Amino acid sequence: MDQICQCGKDCLKSAKIMRASFKNFFKPCENCKKYKFKKYSPLKNQIELKELNANFGMCICGKRHLDVVMAHVLKIMIDEGIKTEGSTLRGVCVPIITPAYPLDSVPYLSENSLVILSEEMDKICAEKIIKEVPEIKGVLKGDLKDIVGIKDSNSIPNTYDLLGGCDLRCDIVKTPWGIVYIYKYQGKMHIELPKPLSPKIIQLKNVLDKYDHPKILDCTCGPGTLGIAALLAGANRVVFNDVWFEAAQTTAMNLEINGFPTEYLGTDKGLIACGDNFEVYCLDIKDIKSVLDYSFDVCLVDVFPGVDPRSFKEAVECICQEVVII
Image 1 (tube, one colour):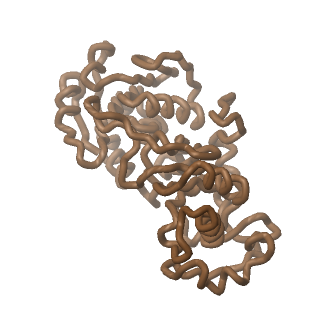
Image 2 (cartoon, one colour):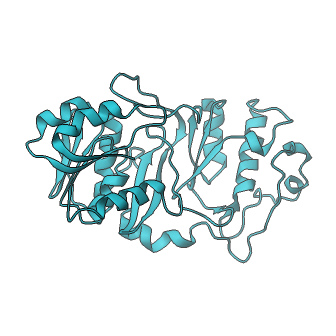
Image 3 (cartoon, one colour):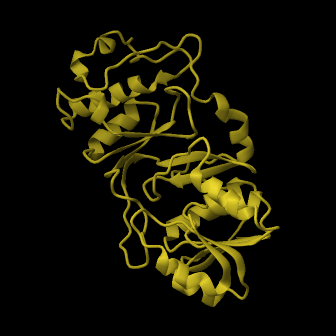
């Protein structure tokens, strides 16, 4: 794998490397101290804050409890005038860990393991956080309520602003056919954190169980999770498509990360990547049937909340035996 992150650093890891390291990524060592910050109490009143060492609670192993990291971020935001003296940990920002997978306890974070999202952030404060808080990989400005991406072909794309660092992060998704590693530049792709077993994956399995090596059209593929899982499950062929170029490009990246040799074709519309048993398109769903000369057993339609999937279904019914709304 020869992919390089947009930031120029070694952020992208192959599935083989991820498998070897992720299980204990957020576990504390025997020297890590437990802290009990109060989420709704002003930071200045927290006794725990006064007990932190000169390294702001950093253990000799290089990890810190998530609450300590958030307290460090909040202190900087207060110092920079972004937050007031009465601000609490509860409202400091949205922490998005990487790699993300279901945890049974609060994580202890190491270097470059967290991207944060705040609608109040400015660039000066973001750059100070990146410099002084080693766990923070990237700082985004935006509102969690605003879904990132394009809802449909008639919508204007929405993104978060990257104010500092790098926002590439990885979700680790468990499926019945193996683990799927989904990288995304979080400012350009919607936040969808893994669950112990995703309802979407369960629904996908129920569909695939009805077929023997089906042909799949993943017509709103996002970062590629469902289609890649279908390939792992033994699908004969998967065609990925998304009207959002960033999503189609991300899918191509994730196919290679997950062990599927990928040829990049370098176009921003139409066919952008392919492999032995898959193709990746960036097209309006209404145009996808005009470039394909074969039909599918199943079409997967996974739209954003609040988007009516009927137009997507109508656009592909003539080339798909079954259309499944995920």
